[in-house]
Length: 548
Image 1 (tube, helix red, strand yellow):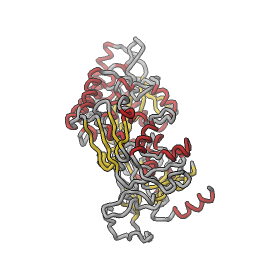
Image 2 (cartoon, rainbow, N blue to C red):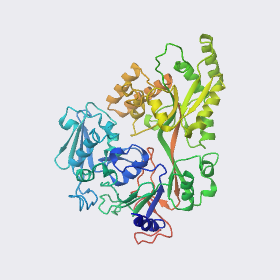
Image 3 (cartoon, rainbow, N blue to C red):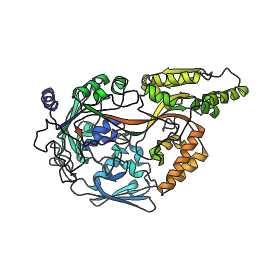
């Protein structure tokens, strides 16, 4: 393996048909059943395909399925699979030596696998809408090319669930051959296949020669010959690698290089413009302060009073935080649900009003004399600056505020088990529907079993939420979503701070790049256009039949 590593990387470092990036968080599995974070998702999406996928506009479109339709008032979904989709070659697996066609039974096997307790997949929740009393416990293969799903009730976000990485299609033969080690020996029908992977060092994917998709001019995808992924943990080293051309792409902003890359307005500094470009799009992600609004104590606690929480929200300088702490890379908000999922282009207008916040607290103090209990914000070291800013702004109202910095694992445990009165957290959409954000406030999702960490309850919210989920018309459903979002803004079990943005930094020669609001990585149409490209496939002045 060491010899392969040295031989392979020496060619990949300079080959213009190879796309290179670093993954500082590392990955420990290439099995889609365990792709619960973006880091493995990015690799899994290159190796596997699902029935459907999201386009850049977050619309669900066919992938392995050539077409799909719903019936029975949205409770039944039928997918017809396209011909010619094949699993990549896997010589060590009987039946896959030369690849084979992907059929409906593979879809059923793959999805049954993620809900099998034996595998303990974190993705089993995507099948929750299925009717377990229907044929096949909610999903059946009709012949070789048709898959049908039966839902308990109409659930418009269902298509989005099938576009998650969890729903990618795997071959039974490979899973049974490798068992738990399938994580290291993935076999899929995606645009690339695994060449080799040395954990903590690097991972290399090669072009899948049997990939089914072609561009508008009939040329086979992907354009790249290989993808090289490094695992350098030092974010500063990743940044230097981008500047020096060892990496072609870097995602996100980190204090290690944020000020060096961006000017005061959040734009790319001019000195980098010759080699780099920056692309941004709103991210379906919200950073917030959560408040555990359930209490066993009969004593009055300030954070349980909605008027206190309202005063806290009014006192936050969201614009200052976005500008000073995040270099203009985030969008200040008081909405929990990102605007794109509410049919809006911008978050709702909001104001910072210290005088009003002070007056509200002074009014409460007349009824609830001080001293009040100290407000404690639980956070991790990555967000100490943010929580310190909140501490300063809230103490200006005469409140006692402390910041409790703990390890990520301790933070997760204490938040999930209701041991944090206030906590900094963020929510990132798994699929592009407001239901994904609003479900955090459903009583059925109480932590630790679900993501309702605040233990917020409201019969009014539950009733409208159910009505929205059952509403087949998108315009009516969006109107209900906006009302639900307004209820959260009124009751404030969470205090939203800002919506993040997907921020990508690319070498100038990278073309065909696609950025989307869920930050999924699509390398099918990516290529490099520079004077060094000389492999004979195309020349720098050709258009390739698509938008470069």
